[in-house]
Image 1 (cartoon, helix red, strand yellow):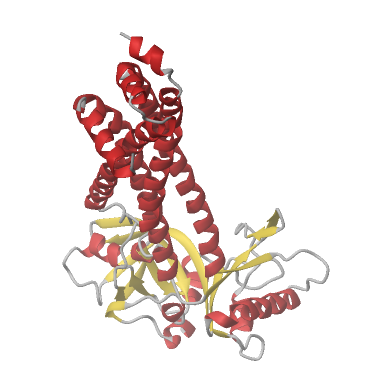
Image 2 (cartoon, helix red, strand yellow; image 1 turned 180 degrees about the vertical axis):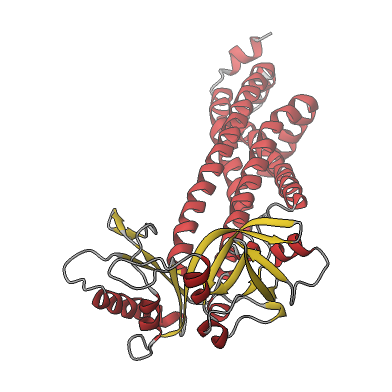
Length: 413
């Protein structure tokens, strides 16, 4: 008996009990749909994180105060005041770090922002004019503060796009006066809103002022260990991606020399945008695999359902098996027929499960919280797994059917 004839007989056997077959496939449908849906959510989350990280700058390098090591990897603590504005100027010197094209030190604090009867608790970022280039921010209205305003410690402010809407609604903020911790600042610019869950890396909800103003007039002069005005973080941009490693090495050498570090551990951490992205991608990969593994459990449950129904089918069709063997059907023919029935159940369920998974992904997309990505790899994985489940759990009933004694089978009532 050829394969096509076996498939025809399998379809006839399944169609004889449509409701039972449909309920059996339900476990596979839910399992495949869950695998595809959860994997698409995981991949969508990974894509969103990648977009957010890449959106905060180009070829970015972060220098963070403090450091500790875990498993041979250094992580910034951010709690130790070990970086200063002078460190940023040293890194910006092309003789010290020729592979660094721009540097922007940042001093970040929370503060109360007030405009008339509107107020918001927001992050105030003291920085330099190079911040706009390093972090790839676009000014939608007005302009970013200039070097002259930085040198004169001017009380000027640039608002994040979302914060500007919260405080001013439809009114133009340019030229108005806001109060940051009760100190008046003139608004000279508004950044384009980046959007996304992280608010463009925090820029949408922040206020930007000259770092000299933040250090002397707004937050007071916070001194770093060893002297100098402290900064929260130093952001730098490498000339291109290929020279990131050499730029990191140059920054490290400059800071070790400035901080008088010889044999001690660094009191700072230098990390790149790529390092952060790789670490976050590893986390999302693990979560995606975890979600897929949980969803795969429902496929196993569906496989057990297939085995259960196939065993019932073998029992119900014992006389049929005996008759077929009596007229010349071989053990292999019986086994192939029942295996094909199990595979047909899992394949049809898998195809329907693809539609169910795509529907789950579309529903998540419609919420606007996350853009899911149904990948070809996820579909192939889910269908392959469902086919394997059908073969595995159909093997025992098929073997049992093939091993029936034709005389005993003919006597079965």
